[in-house]
Length: 219
Image 1 (spheres, rainbow, N blue to C red):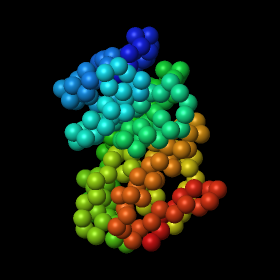
Image 2: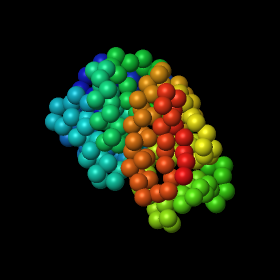
Image 3: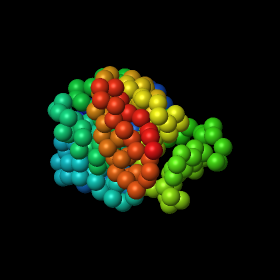
Image 4: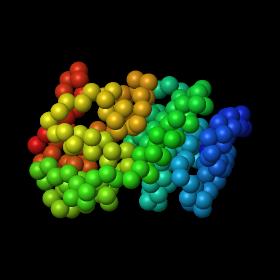
């Protein structure tokens, strides 16, 4: 838990520990980078406005070091630009302050379920045109070459590739790939789709926008 407000740390700690989580906390960005590297936590809740180094810089350095720990970013401003920048830097989710601590716990649980859940597919996975998705190894191949892909992007692609050609609404994708209703914050889906399109740029596979509805996977 990375935040320079003791009251936020205390409230979040109380609710998270009540659900069985062990919570470590730190109040500035540079100390957070060191602590994340040393402790290797299962998940990081990261405020944007921090002394030393802001949350964007912390996220950038953590991802730059190859650490794919799930990150939930906290922002005191309900502005899309903060959320978009955080997601593009590699955050998995975001919450706007003031937040309901129960919602924080729910999102932590949802992300950890996605990260830890066992695969129910065989090793062959999903094949569609030049795309192969291996659920056991959580790997994506295009033209036989591995594609670097983050946990949330993998889950989103898996939903789309499971039924190619089907149009999914943003709300359906939030529910299926994120694990529960994100209270209409469908911009999260748009940002992750944009990231997926970049990663699949060399593929025959395309993620098409269906105006006013959502997205579908096509060749």
